[in-house]
Image (cartoon, rainbow, N blue to C red; front, side, top):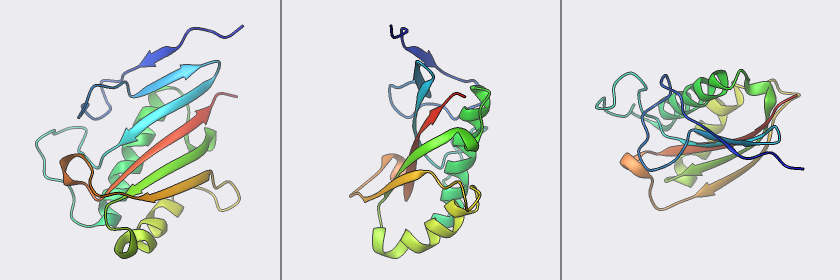
Length: 132
């Protein structure tokens, strides 16, 4: 029998830019909402310049959410990456993204080119994780 969903929100994670929970968990499966390259300590700070810096901030924000769940990147099974400038930024985003995972434990992934993201970000990433 499936448990009721748990809706997680964390004070240390970035402020919501829309109506959502930072993560939703059911039966040990966790969907992490896509994170933007926003500063979790200053909502009004401008976004970092360039896709590499924005990808680092997005990944660091996702790590904050995982830590709030007492998990880490080793629990991540899949990611979806959204890029507003796919052709221009794909390789640079990959270089930065790849550094967060051991080469023998890369999650499944989809990367999608989109016409726009909140706050005019260049990149957004969401994740699916699983408790051991």
